[in-house]
Image (tube, rainbow, N blue to C red; front, side):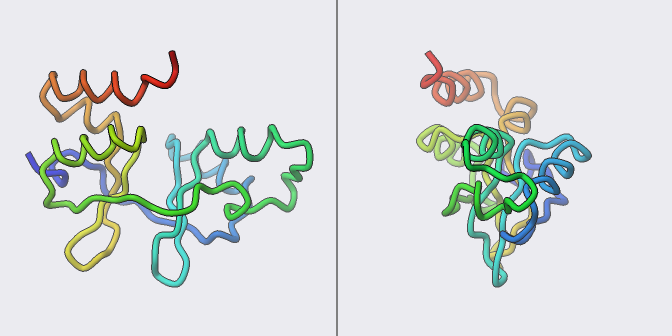
Length: 140
C-alpha cells in the first residue's frame, strides 16, 4: 500500500506570522491537531495543539495577543512522498516518534498529511500495533 492510499488530502499551510489564536481557531474549526507552516514556498515547520500549550500557554512570558506561529512552531520538517510504501512512512514516523507527517509529490509540493488516524484506518493491524507502541513509548 502507498502513502497516497492512506493520507488525507486538502491540507494547506499558513505563514509563520499567523497569530497563535488564529491557529487554535483553525484547529478547532477543522478538528485537526497540527498545521504546517510555510514560507517562501517551502515548509519550514509545524504547529501542533501541544506546541500551543507547552511552548505558549505554559510559558510565563507568553502573550496570546501577539504570539505567532513562529513563536511556538517546531522548526524543521520531516516528510514522505505520496508514492512511498506506507510501511516505510510508518517506520519513519516511529523513528521520529511523531503522529503526523506531511506528504509531498514528485514536484515537492505538499499534497496531504499522514496521521496516526490515517494509519489506523488503512494499515495492516500488525503495523498499526507496532507504530502505536513505539510512538507512545515515551509516555510510560
